[in-house]
Amino acid sequence: MDVNAVLSGARDAMSVKRVFGEAYEKDGVTVIPVAKVSGGGGGGGGPADTGGGAGFGLSARPVGVYVIRDGEVTWKPALDETRVALMGMLVPIIALLTLRSVAKAIFRKRR
Image (tube, rainbow, N blue to C red; front, top):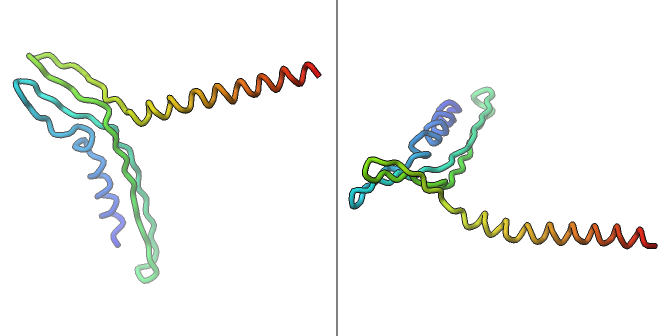
């Protein structure tokens, strides 16, 4: 296994082509999709007979689009519904745990 080839593949995978998608046009409006891409790679080596290895990971998520209409560029952010739903669940849970801690502290003071 050639570690340099694997790391080169990782570098190519994390290129600007992954961040800015292919622009497309419809009815005179151009749309350019944008994503957040992050990743990393690593490798190891040793004598040719005993082994070595390499690997990389890549994560991408949409963040929005640039819309070009009549020569004017605007930014339209993507709505991550999963993140919104998660926050909608976490906020009440944290509030309840905080309220529980406050109630326990008040109860202990009254004893």
